[in-house]
Length: 469
View 1: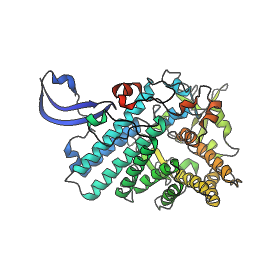
View 2: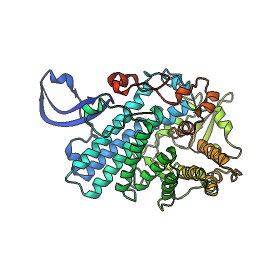
View 3: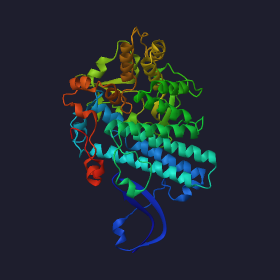
């Protein structure tokens, strides 16, 4: 028997962890097979006391943001969506030749692929942790109401955000709102419309709880505008164009943000176009994206921008000049994303990982306006993007042309940013026509990733597997 202070319970099928504080717990030898003994990391905060102090409640959320930054879909590391979905679509070329990355690049995924499993499990782990915060805040008796609203609003936002990305990648998924293992291990998948509705409900609730202003000077904690910015995207994806335009307008008109015409300043830590970003791990580190994408000699260690992507830039587009960079050996030339300029630490952090920024809100509103017949308003928003990129104003005059131009600008505005390109091809119904040409391994069923095989085996209620797998 052992005297343990902390234990971890693995809650399948989502491979998420709940850490329970246990004081002077005596475990029999038979019980030891059910628990894993680990020391509690210095950053780990557990137990009900977390939600009786604003300082510790903030720290619990800070840990979730660190998980988003360093693991799962939103991570700027090679395992995150910026790389994985860039390879899966037509932005990036793989240079690792690994058994994990090549199937992604070649659109030849299987249900037992490690990335298929890791994005699923890390995401549901983050959702579980957000749910733990929501429940802890609800049960708290020591926190002021303003603090409870803010922290629970942050957790609701994270829960909605991660579910949104899971929906784009895997299609029909479970929407998890609790921490009960017996319930979670038997959940079923919900239809996309139901998931979108749950996401919107959480974001709407978050927007009513979050403060107008940021609670941190570096925009690393969500405020009301962050929830509304994400709501604008969700409404656009659901073709609720009036709502999408209204939410985007609210964000655009907020005095918290200001348009930036210098492309080299947009991805700086203090940019006024940043709506929400993930802080670096230390005060001297910069973004994971910089470390991942930037290389100084060839061949690239991870990935590079595809040649056909580079050729597709419109003549005079300053995003090509400022947001991409060439590396040559004399015989070969490769290009890497250069939105983030720093790949190593500096005296103080200059670049964080930006998740939501103002340009998206203009393009959301442009698309929503065009679909509502407000072509003048759509062109005004579209030209905001074009002129900043050094391009002349659009000559498009009919709805279909304007919508096509908006999608084109989204491609070159948001390349290698958390999967925007693939999600746009998917929602516009153009994935087959475009990717079947640029990606020889593409099949129509590749529009969704498979549900991880281990998850289907652990919980048959997740059946059936997505088509094609």
